[in-house]
Length: 84
View (cartoon, rainbow, N blue to C red):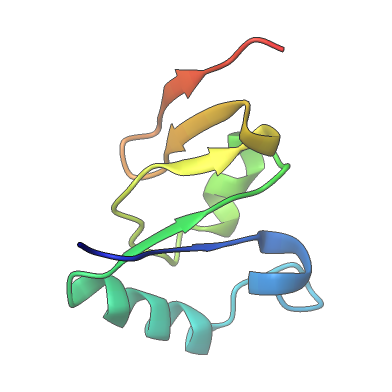
């Protein structure tokens, strides 16, 4: 069984400038390239996050809008949407 690592953005993955550092992106991408599973979970909408996450080679869907939606950043589409 594989472990999925999930990270929030604000106050966790982003630095004080609301960006992912090159160092952080390199570490996460190396993990993903070696078969690791990494996703984002955020209250933010997918729109806007897509540009902030462009440095990451995300390979599995992520949780956006406080869990109301599952979004694939690499496919640029919603996988699941729950109406609240």
